Image 1 (tube, rainbow, N blue to C red):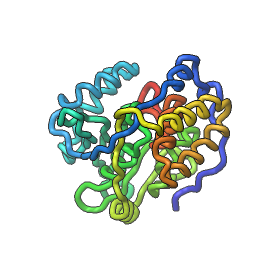
Image 2 (cartoon, rainbow, N blue to C red; image 1 turned 180 degrees about the vertical axis):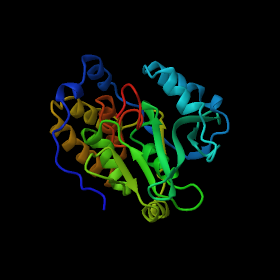
Image 3 (tube, one colour; image 1 turned 60 degrees about the vertical axis):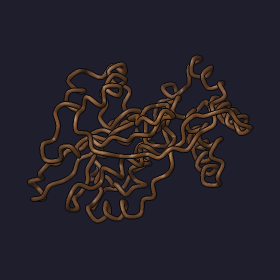
Image 4 (spheres, rainbow, N blue to C red; image 1 turned 60 degrees about the horizontal axis):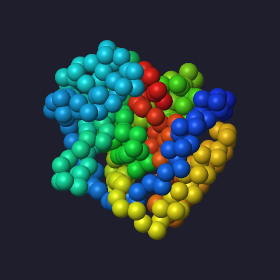
Length: 275
């Protein structure tokens, strides 16, 4: 039976506090969203992810790490080891906005193969749109139903990412709280019940922008982890009630503070700036 998550100390507040540059950025009134369809497809050539690779390189990820993610493809899953989320731009072209990296490994202990989620990443400016959740659900199946495992960078200190995984059905495999498991049956159920949301991207300003600006100002005023977690709950309530504009804006501001409703900053095993 999977171990239960026990209470732990929250991360250091100073690491989460917004800088003056971040606060200034938060004061900008965001553009109103425009709905776009999100498509998740397998990646045949990692060359198509050049822009994403460049962004990750600028985040000080090592060349070894990037080689593992983009070039050392899993032969058993290829090309489904890399699944890419794309949206259509105003010009009609498809732009990659995030991806998930997976591998298939044989577990001698259990005498079966398990699917491993090794990395999930979404452009910072596209977060707060449930793209991380969409990619995670897309990565839960590969052929016949299999157990799905992932290693959480930062272990139990990474509360926001853990919140996403547990909402899907992942549970800790043991008391070390380093690996999480989603059983094959639970993975099937999660995929079958998931309804993919419509992503929204910036568009022309509207009357809702004042509400969005107020939401951003509220996030910037947070001085503690409990304050931020309370605001996260408020944002989710607003989104559930249909207040998408203010909820999306506040979610975006939370990303700037390193708090992500979609599952954290960076990827599961990112070397620098990870979850």
